Length: 312
Image 1 (cartoon, rainbow, N blue to C red):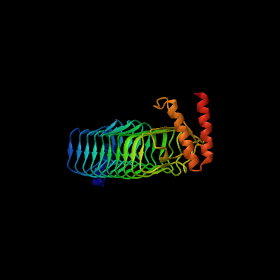
Image 2 (image 1 turned 90 degrees about the vertical axis):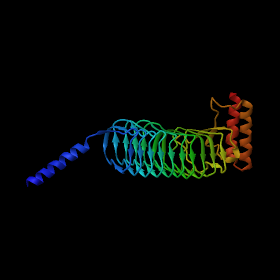
Image 3 (image 1 turned 180 degrees about the vertical axis):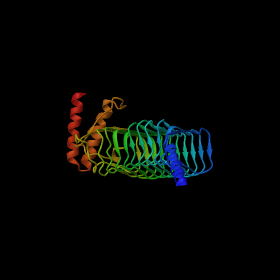
Image 4 (image 1 turned 135 degrees about the vertical axis):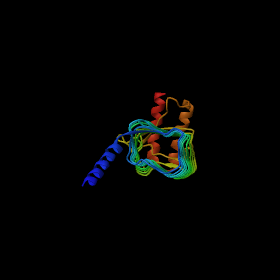
């Protein structure tokens, strides 16, 4: 009995101690063995410039401070699944050599991925992000899977997607911006909710954009696009006002399928188009809709053009 009591007491003490948040401050440290911090709580989490030679498991952790993994190298599989980052996280300049799973992750403040390199598949699926998530100058050599995540604002700038890219079932509460980005394969937005404002600017794509069942934003900007396959919004849905403002600049209109009964051509205050160019765009779109025998769309666009001319 005495030994059993001691064993239970020690086990209980170990459980209590393990449950207490602790500091992990491993700047420039090399982890040559696998690590497993599953469900651990951290009062400080700073792994800047750390190298993880073997599998790194951060499954279900919670960090009271901003989680810092900038400049870190992950040479084997790693898991950040079900992590909670109430103060946000920094993965700038990190490099992932194997698959990385950040599914079901929750972050209440900004998450940053600047010049982060993903050699294999990247999963940021079914997460909840209450502040901005920013990817800048990234390489995604494998598939990039964002399925079902809820974003406040997501920005992808100067990214290179070599595999399949999936945003199906995602919710963008405010904005989605994809700029100066190359997409080698298909990108899927099926049944996504695109929020208030979406910008596709400087996209070079060889794949197909899937918009079936998507809920379009209040404002859509399509600029400087180089597309192999068209953007077809005919099977998309619309927000509560059943309408979408669309800004078009430096795009091949033959790549676009827009029903102007539901889209209104709009010019940003920062538009480079003068009134002559704007009138030319209206006329080109009207002729295209008539050629496609989409007469109701052409009639709606003519009404928009007349209103534009009366105002200007």
